[in-house]
Amino acid sequence: MIDLPPLEFALRVSLTREGGLAYLPGLAQPRSIDLAACPPGLREQVCEALQSAAPVASPECGAQGGDQRYFHVELVFRDPADGATASLVFDVPEAEAPDSLVQLWRSQGARP
Image (cartoon, rainbow, N blue to C red; front, side, top):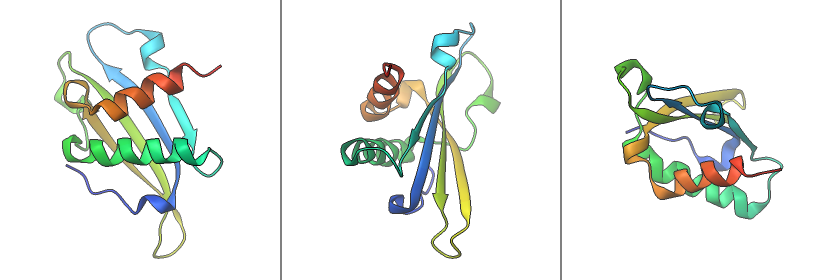
């Protein structure tokens, strides 16, 4: 479990699907969402996915090794204390990933 910062300060989210025995470029392609410029509906979807993923997230799934796939998430946000840009990086095991995170991954990969 990880603690998310207040999501109203979120600026950008990057998602990468990693792990597994075979490298598949289509699965590894990063998805990046600019939360400052995206439509409000997409921002809501992203925030819901992050909140659903936080309870099953860990700082580093990849360090455990093996053939487990996981979603690597980087959240860039404005620190409410001093206004500086900061980031939070965490992993979500694919087997435990909430549907909202999986759907976000799929929908952002389908963009033209």
